Figure 1 (cartoon, rainbow, N blue to C red):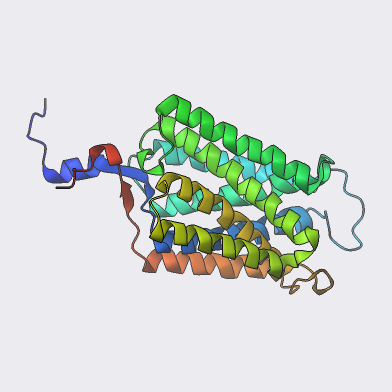
Figure 2: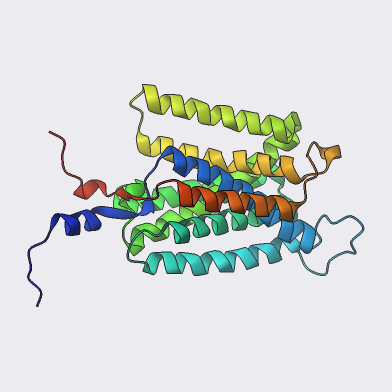
Length: 276
Protein backbone atom coordinates (compact mmCIF):
# COMPACT_ATOMS: atom_id res chain seq x y z
CA UNK A 1 0.00 0.00 0.00
CA UNK A 2 1.31 3.42 -0.93
CA UNK A 3 0.36 5.81 1.86
CA UNK A 4 2.74 8.63 1.03
CA UNK A 5 1.27 12.10 1.67
CA UNK A 6 -0.39 13.80 -1.27
CA UNK A 7 1.79 16.51 -2.76
CA UNK A 8 0.73 19.80 -4.33
CA UNK A 9 1.60 18.27 -7.72
CA UNK A 10 -0.82 15.38 -7.09
CA UNK A 11 -3.61 17.76 -6.13
CA UNK A 12 -2.94 19.90 -9.19
CA UNK A 13 -3.02 16.89 -11.53
CA UNK A 14 -6.27 15.67 -9.95
CA UNK A 15 -7.81 19.10 -10.33
CA UNK A 16 -7.30 19.25 -14.08
CA UNK A 17 -10.18 18.52 -16.41
CA UNK A 18 -9.70 16.61 -19.67
CA UNK A 19 -10.59 19.53 -21.92
CA UNK A 20 -8.40 22.58 -22.67
CA UNK A 21 -8.51 25.85 -20.82
CA UNK A 22 -10.75 28.35 -22.59
CA UNK A 23 -8.34 30.94 -23.96
CA UNK A 24 -8.15 33.11 -27.07
CA UNK A 25 -5.93 30.44 -28.62
CA UNK A 26 -8.64 27.85 -27.99
CA UNK A 27 -11.16 29.89 -30.00
CA UNK A 28 -8.74 30.52 -32.87
CA UNK A 29 -7.98 26.81 -33.25
CA UNK A 30 -11.67 25.96 -32.83
CA UNK A 31 -12.69 28.25 -35.71
CA UNK A 32 -9.95 26.82 -37.94
CA UNK A 33 -11.04 23.28 -37.01
CA UNK A 34 -14.65 24.02 -37.91
CA UNK A 35 -13.57 25.50 -41.24
CA UNK A 36 -11.47 22.40 -41.91
CA UNK A 37 -14.49 20.29 -41.01
CA UNK A 38 -16.52 22.02 -43.71
CA UNK A 39 -13.92 21.68 -46.46
CA UNK A 40 -12.92 18.16 -45.37
CA UNK A 41 -16.49 16.91 -45.10
CA UNK A 42 -17.38 18.42 -48.48
CA UNK A 43 -14.26 16.87 -50.03
CA UNK A 44 -15.49 13.41 -49.10
CA UNK A 45 -19.26 13.64 -49.56
CA UNK A 46 -19.47 16.11 -52.44
CA UNK A 47 -16.24 15.66 -54.41
CA UNK A 48 -15.05 12.08 -53.81
CA UNK A 49 -18.47 10.47 -53.31
CA UNK A 50 -19.95 12.48 -56.17
CA UNK A 51 -22.86 14.31 -54.56
CA UNK A 52 -22.09 17.54 -56.42
CA UNK A 53 -19.38 16.51 -58.85
CA UNK A 54 -20.26 18.05 -62.26
CA UNK A 55 -21.04 15.42 -64.88
CA UNK A 56 -20.85 12.52 -62.44
CA UNK A 57 -23.26 9.64 -62.96
CA UNK A 58 -26.03 9.16 -60.43
CA UNK A 59 -24.52 7.45 -57.39
CA UNK A 60 -26.03 4.15 -56.22
CA UNK A 61 -25.58 5.32 -52.62
CA UNK A 62 -26.13 8.52 -50.70
CA UNK A 63 -22.79 10.33 -50.46
CA UNK A 64 -23.88 12.35 -47.43
CA UNK A 65 -24.90 9.20 -45.56
CA UNK A 66 -21.72 7.32 -46.50
CA UNK A 67 -19.62 10.33 -45.48
CA UNK A 68 -21.46 10.49 -42.16
CA UNK A 69 -20.79 6.80 -41.53
CA UNK A 70 -17.08 7.24 -42.33
CA UNK A 71 -16.57 10.28 -40.11
CA UNK A 72 -19.00 9.00 -37.49
CA UNK A 73 -16.97 5.82 -37.12
CA UNK A 74 -13.76 7.81 -36.81
CA UNK A 75 -15.38 10.12 -34.25
CA UNK A 76 -16.66 7.19 -32.16
CA UNK A 77 -13.18 5.64 -32.09
CA UNK A 78 -11.51 8.92 -31.07
CA UNK A 79 -14.12 9.63 -28.37
CA UNK A 80 -13.51 6.14 -26.97
CA UNK A 81 -9.76 6.81 -26.83
CA UNK A 82 -10.38 10.29 -25.36
CA UNK A 83 -12.56 8.88 -22.58
CA UNK A 84 -10.00 6.20 -21.73
CA UNK A 85 -7.15 8.73 -21.61
CA UNK A 86 -6.07 9.56 -18.08
CA UNK A 87 -5.22 13.20 -18.70
CA UNK A 88 -5.65 16.01 -21.22
CA UNK A 89 -3.84 15.37 -24.50
CA UNK A 90 -4.03 18.34 -26.90
CA UNK A 91 -3.40 16.30 -30.06
CA UNK A 92 -6.06 13.75 -29.18
CA UNK A 93 -8.50 16.48 -28.18
CA UNK A 94 -8.17 18.50 -31.40
CA UNK A 95 -8.29 15.38 -33.58
CA UNK A 96 -11.58 14.51 -31.89
CA UNK A 97 -12.90 18.04 -32.42
CA UNK A 98 -11.99 17.86 -36.11
CA UNK A 99 -13.69 14.47 -36.40
CA UNK A 100 -16.82 15.89 -34.77
CA UNK A 101 -16.94 18.86 -37.10
CA UNK A 102 -16.42 16.77 -40.27
CA UNK A 103 -19.07 14.31 -39.08
CA UNK A 104 -21.29 17.31 -38.31
CA UNK A 105 -20.83 18.63 -41.84
CA UNK A 106 -21.91 15.43 -43.58
CA UNK A 107 -24.69 14.71 -41.05
CA UNK A 108 -26.15 18.22 -41.44
CA UNK A 109 -26.05 17.91 -45.23
CA UNK A 110 -27.82 14.55 -44.95
CA UNK A 111 -30.51 16.03 -42.68
CA UNK A 112 -30.99 19.16 -44.81
CA UNK A 113 -30.87 17.63 -48.28
CA UNK A 114 -31.55 13.90 -48.10
CA UNK A 115 -34.37 13.92 -45.54
CA UNK A 116 -36.24 16.60 -47.49
CA UNK A 117 -36.76 18.94 -44.53
CA UNK A 118 -34.55 21.76 -45.84
CA UNK A 119 -32.30 24.10 -43.91
CA UNK A 120 -35.01 25.43 -41.52
CA UNK A 121 -36.22 21.93 -40.68
CA UNK A 122 -32.71 20.59 -40.28
CA UNK A 123 -31.68 23.52 -38.09
CA UNK A 124 -34.72 23.15 -35.82
CA UNK A 125 -34.24 19.39 -35.55
CA UNK A 126 -30.58 19.78 -34.61
CA UNK A 127 -31.30 22.63 -32.18
CA UNK A 128 -33.69 20.28 -30.42
CA UNK A 129 -30.91 17.66 -30.24
CA UNK A 130 -28.46 20.17 -28.71
CA UNK A 131 -30.98 21.39 -26.10
CA UNK A 132 -32.01 17.84 -25.22
CA UNK A 133 -28.39 16.82 -24.75
CA UNK A 134 -27.64 19.83 -22.53
CA UNK A 135 -30.81 19.24 -20.51
CA UNK A 136 -29.99 15.56 -19.95
CA UNK A 137 -26.41 16.49 -19.00
CA UNK A 138 -27.63 19.08 -16.48
CA UNK A 139 -30.25 16.77 -14.99
CA UNK A 140 -27.69 14.01 -14.57
CA UNK A 141 -24.72 15.96 -13.19
CA UNK A 142 -26.17 19.29 -12.01
CA UNK A 143 -23.95 21.36 -14.31
CA UNK A 144 -22.96 21.77 -17.95
CA UNK A 145 -19.71 23.57 -17.14
CA UNK A 146 -17.04 22.16 -19.45
CA UNK A 147 -14.43 22.47 -16.71
CA UNK A 148 -16.17 19.59 -14.90
CA UNK A 149 -15.38 17.20 -17.75
CA UNK A 150 -13.09 14.81 -15.90
CA UNK A 151 -14.91 11.44 -15.87
CA UNK A 152 -16.48 9.14 -18.49
CA UNK A 153 -20.00 10.30 -17.62
CA UNK A 154 -19.29 14.00 -18.17
CA UNK A 155 -17.17 13.24 -21.23
CA UNK A 156 -19.95 11.25 -22.85
CA UNK A 157 -22.36 14.17 -22.49
CA UNK A 158 -19.66 16.61 -23.57
CA UNK A 159 -18.87 14.87 -26.84
CA UNK A 160 -22.52 14.16 -27.64
CA UNK A 161 -23.34 17.84 -27.17
CA UNK A 162 -20.25 18.88 -29.13
CA UNK A 163 -21.26 16.71 -32.09
CA UNK A 164 -24.85 18.00 -32.12
CA UNK A 165 -23.63 21.61 -31.86
CA UNK A 166 -21.19 21.10 -34.75
CA UNK A 167 -24.01 19.65 -36.86
CA UNK A 168 -26.40 22.46 -35.92
CA UNK A 169 -23.78 25.05 -36.81
CA UNK A 170 -23.36 23.58 -40.28
CA UNK A 171 -27.11 23.71 -40.91
CA UNK A 172 -27.34 27.30 -39.61
CA UNK A 173 -24.45 28.42 -41.79
CA UNK A 174 -25.99 26.91 -44.92
CA UNK A 175 -29.42 28.34 -44.06
CA UNK A 176 -28.16 31.91 -43.60
CA UNK A 177 -25.96 31.76 -46.71
CA UNK A 178 -28.80 30.33 -48.81
CA UNK A 179 -31.25 32.94 -47.51
CA UNK A 180 -29.57 35.60 -49.64
CA UNK A 181 -26.60 36.79 -47.60
CA UNK A 182 -24.14 34.51 -49.36
CA UNK A 183 -21.14 32.87 -47.71
CA UNK A 184 -19.20 36.08 -47.05
CA UNK A 185 -22.34 37.77 -45.68
CA UNK A 186 -23.06 34.79 -43.45
CA UNK A 187 -19.51 34.89 -42.11
CA UNK A 188 -19.97 38.58 -41.22
CA UNK A 189 -23.26 37.83 -39.44
CA UNK A 190 -21.82 35.05 -37.31
CA UNK A 191 -18.61 37.00 -36.71
CA UNK A 192 -20.71 39.90 -35.43
CA UNK A 193 -22.60 37.49 -33.18
CA UNK A 194 -19.35 36.28 -31.67
CA UNK A 195 -18.24 39.90 -31.14
CA UNK A 196 -21.45 40.53 -29.18
CA UNK A 197 -20.78 37.48 -27.02
CA UNK A 198 -17.21 38.69 -26.40
CA UNK A 199 -18.57 42.06 -25.28
CA UNK A 200 -21.04 40.36 -22.95
CA UNK A 201 -18.17 38.35 -21.49
CA UNK A 202 -15.99 41.44 -20.98
CA UNK A 203 -18.56 43.92 -19.69
CA UNK A 204 -21.31 41.90 -18.00
CA UNK A 205 -21.64 39.17 -15.39
CA UNK A 206 -23.71 36.95 -17.65
CA UNK A 207 -23.25 33.22 -17.01
CA UNK A 208 -19.88 32.11 -18.40
CA UNK A 209 -21.28 28.65 -19.05
CA UNK A 210 -24.11 30.07 -21.17
CA UNK A 211 -21.71 32.33 -23.07
CA UNK A 212 -19.35 29.42 -23.72
CA UNK A 213 -22.01 27.23 -25.29
CA UNK A 214 -23.44 30.13 -27.30
CA UNK A 215 -19.97 30.92 -28.64
CA UNK A 216 -19.18 27.26 -29.27
CA UNK A 217 -22.31 26.90 -31.40
CA UNK A 218 -21.72 30.17 -33.28
CA UNK A 219 -18.12 29.35 -34.19
CA UNK A 220 -19.39 26.39 -36.19
CA UNK A 221 -21.56 28.32 -38.69
CA UNK A 222 -18.77 30.89 -38.93
CA UNK A 223 -16.39 28.11 -39.92
CA UNK A 224 -19.02 26.60 -42.23
CA UNK A 225 -19.59 29.84 -44.14
CA UNK A 226 -15.85 30.57 -44.37
CA UNK A 227 -15.23 27.03 -45.59
CA UNK A 228 -18.00 27.31 -48.17
CA UNK A 229 -16.67 30.70 -49.24
CA UNK A 230 -13.30 29.07 -49.91
CA UNK A 231 -14.46 26.04 -51.87
CA UNK A 232 -17.82 26.82 -53.49
CA UNK A 233 -17.95 27.83 -57.19
CA UNK A 234 -17.53 31.50 -58.08
CA UNK A 235 -21.03 31.50 -59.58
CA UNK A 236 -22.39 30.63 -56.12
CA UNK A 237 -20.39 33.29 -54.31
CA UNK A 238 -17.32 31.22 -53.43
CA UNK A 239 -13.66 31.33 -54.43
CA UNK A 240 -13.64 27.89 -56.09
CA UNK A 241 -10.55 26.82 -54.12
CA UNK A 242 -9.74 23.12 -54.29
CA UNK A 243 -11.38 21.45 -51.28
CA UNK A 244 -8.52 19.04 -50.58
CA UNK A 245 -5.94 21.84 -50.87
CA UNK A 246 -7.96 24.14 -48.58
CA UNK A 247 -8.30 21.26 -46.10
CA UNK A 248 -4.55 20.62 -46.16
CA UNK A 249 -3.71 24.31 -45.60
CA UNK A 250 -6.11 24.50 -42.65
CA UNK A 251 -4.66 21.30 -41.16
CA UNK A 252 -1.12 22.72 -41.37
CA UNK A 253 -2.28 25.94 -39.65
CA UNK A 254 -3.94 23.97 -36.84
CA UNK A 255 -0.84 21.83 -36.27
CA UNK A 256 1.34 24.96 -36.18
CA UNK A 257 -0.93 26.68 -33.65
CA UNK A 258 -1.11 23.63 -31.39
CA UNK A 259 2.69 23.58 -31.39
CA UNK A 260 3.08 27.34 -30.87
CA UNK A 261 0.26 28.22 -28.48
CA UNK A 262 0.30 26.96 -24.87
CA UNK A 263 -1.94 23.90 -24.48
CA UNK A 264 -3.11 23.19 -20.95
CA UNK A 265 -6.09 21.58 -19.32
CA UNK A 266 -8.75 23.66 -17.60
CA UNK A 267 -8.98 23.61 -13.81
CA UNK A 268 -11.79 21.61 -12.30
CA UNK A 269 -13.96 24.13 -10.35
CA UNK A 270 -14.75 21.68 -7.56
CA UNK A 271 -11.06 21.41 -6.72
CA UNK A 272 -9.96 25.00 -7.24
CA UNK A 273 -8.90 26.85 -4.07
CA UNK A 274 -11.25 29.60 -2.94
CA UNK A 275 -10.09 33.14 -3.47
CA UNK A 276 -9.21 35.13 -0.41
